[in-house]
Image (cartoon, rainbow, N blue to C red; front, side, top):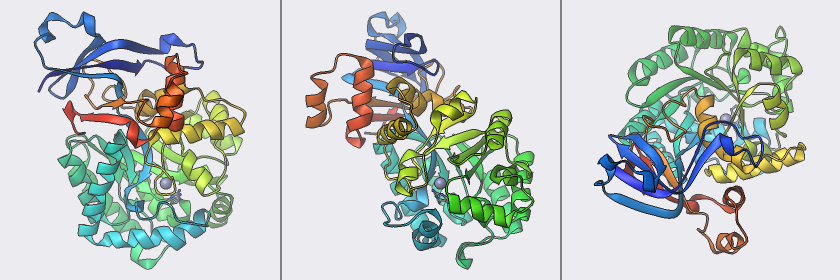
Amino acid sequence: SDKVLRARVLTFFERPDSLDDESCYAFWEDGAVVTDGGRIAWRGNFSDLPEAYRTLPVTDHRPGILMPGFIDTHAHFAQMGVIASYGAQLLDWLHGYTFVQEALFEDEAHAQSIAACYLDEILRHGVTTSVVYGTSHKTAMDAFFAEAEARGLCMIAGKVLMDRNAPGNLLDTSQSGYDDSRRLIDTWHGRGRLHYAVTPRFAITCSEAQLDLAGTLMRETPDVFLQTHLCENRSEIEETARLFPGARDYLDVYESNGLLGPRSLFGHCIHLEPRERTALKESRSVAVFCPTSNLFLGSGLFDYETLTESGVRVALATDVGAGTSYSMLATASEAYKVSQLCGYSLNPLESFYLLTLGNARALSMEDRIGALEAGSDADLIVVDSQATSAMRTRMQSSSSLTDELFVLQTLGDDRCIAATYIAGERLK
Ligand code: GUN
Ligand code: ZN
């Protein structure tokens, strides 16, 4: 199934810090990507296509822009039934809506059906890799991983660990949480394109013993990920301080259990103390910016500029279902608005870098996904900046790539995803 995809082609090399930073990316107006055995074999100007590939079938996606598939670094597949729930901030939202829906995942058939819906939904939105929270049910994770494997996807996911301060039907114990995670890691981690993330929900729902065992899981399996929530909401932070009186601050609850490091992803990071910022930086942990969620729950404004300039690794994510859109374009648009409120204009080159190579780097997966390099996995999307009549009208006054990308993120959504390829195979 080797093929040539002809399109306008965009890929990043580095984080662009200004609109005219042309050294950070390559853009070919008439470009081509050759896929071979699920990988990228070549990319460049269509007219420079090497002799060896000239007999391959060509699909012409012009004027669509071919780029690496988007990466979502924080989402909850079990919250498809929670998205768009009215009137609450974090802790009330969790108890009033989220835990109720998550309890349904005790039923493996339900988990399987929602896992399939979730993966099909994100693929329609051009998201080809996602970092996913399950529920506390191990069978729900088996269902999720099986659905991801059936689609050939590169996914990172984990069973939620929560052994207190939630309804009894959602609680594990520190030991059962450890055992179930261990079994899931042994079954799924490194199988095909699947990876495991140890997933203590957050400090409030995890005992010290559970966090300690999460650290044990990390040490036992060096290349697993860790995902959790940090400093999202003021009441959450107060409650955490009350539950962990010995901790220096919120992050210290995780730090003292060995949970920081280059494969650790901390969702939200809105209300950080300077010490927490420094510890994130020094441990090379990742702060995950979830703008639609942070606005929806009224949690606060993520300070993208301060965090990146302090040397903290930053990623961008939907956080469905506190997040309100499956679209990474819509997510970039809200990231722009949040940054405006913080006095920083996140430029569209930087946004598209984040959606692709930036998020891949946050996952230390840039050798496989996030860029169009020979040898990388051919997870690709074609993006159409004329997908709606409002976009076509706006695009009449557009004359640059950066303006086009800004129109895409501001007005675009799933209607702009004209094609999705997974390991070189077209899905849509
Ligand atoms: N903190 C603990 N659990 C959650 C969750 O499911 N969503 C969000 N946004 N924050 C959390
Ligand atoms: Zn979350």
